[in-house]
Length: 478
Image (cartoon, rainbow, N blue to C red):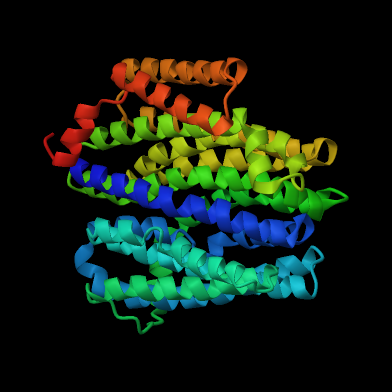
């Protein structure tokens, strides 16, 4: 299993490093620059509003289904068409509930049409991820890996082609192109599921649906609470500030970098959950996979957080020019949230796979209280910098809570040496970034390359990252 994890993480990182950052920084930033802060700020707020209803779109189905399929592969043929019937009903409920909430808080006209397109896109994207999680659950990890960046690749080709052709572009175009591209992705992932005998004719088995949703309910609460923490800040900013649309647009410019950085954590979580589930079902040790994943994510999150923190002004200048310069201070603080948020993607799947759902939900519920209270009272006073500070505080609290849950339930070994090495690695990285930023006067990109080489060299020499261990994992020589 460690060999399979190493293989898939290697290719996932390569694929996603090549494709997803190009989409985020090459395509999405182009869309944002073309449409402007107010128009994109409206889109950012509407997306956040729909995302708050993610618990309807995915009432825990993805997480529960990943574990269920991984441990009950023989029931796949019976389970799949009933799951499809359930998803169509959820699409209708997602759209209606989002429209009602948008209308109540004051959205009218074209905003509601945008919202319908965003709801359909979100439904299709989660269906695509659900199909991929089923492939992982059936043991087809490598197919899932190669499909992981298909959505972004297709959007790059279509939107990039439109830019090159000089096509007139606005938010409406952006919304409906996403609908078309995600439809194609769902159909392609469905082709691979068909090889496992999946029947795409939906069956509306209400008894089975009720039983399955009851089993999913704890995971639905997770989805709801996570959605609030991930996307409510845009809604708060747009509704609580006098120039809310503009401020939401400025904030979204910095949030994009956090979103991009968190991508690596999500990749790990999506792969680790079915693996941990399978290992626990077969009474095998999870520590080797956990240890490798933790150290890789820990170093990556520190590198990303440090790079964007120390060079935030340079990054904004390249991607946005002066239009979004007001977002630099909030982005510099917000990007620090990537460190606890990314690392939590190792602890979270382990907690979910071990079915410690109640403790997980209680942790997130208390985090939501901190998050909502902080944003509601601080944003009207301090603006978008308050939203960034609250995000960092909330994710740090979540990570510490996850460590406590894992330690209390014996899910991780209390290895003092790894803890000491991790703290030392964090100090070393900070010193290296600070030294280069303060005393080296080169082009910032060249500085980042030198920093990366220096950091990787130090971590290999200190054996915090052991090349031989990674090679043994890839070759399967445990």
